[in-house]
Image (spheres, rainbow, N blue to C red):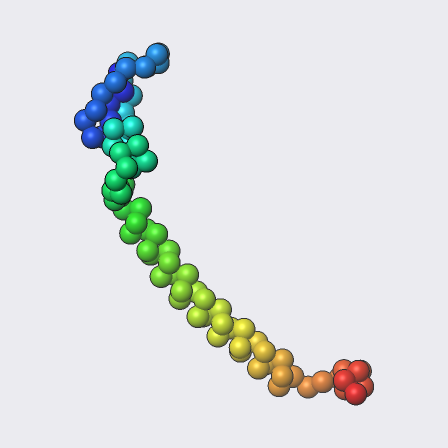
Length: 86
C-alpha cells in the first residue's frame, strides 16, 4: 500500500508492505493543473541562502581581481617586457 503526504492511498505490486511518498498523481501540480507551492524541509530557504552567499562571493571575487590587476600594474617591468611593448 502506497500512502501519500496528502492522504491518498493506492496499492501497487510491490513486495514492501508500506510505502510513503511526498507527492502523488492526486496532488502533483502537473496532474491537477494547479500551481501549488511545495516546500519540503526548507529547500527554498537553503536555496535563498545559497543565492545570498553567491552574491557576496561575486563582490569579493571582483575586489580580489581588481587588487590583483592593480598589483600587476604597479609591478616593475623587466627589460624584455618593455621591449616587447614597443
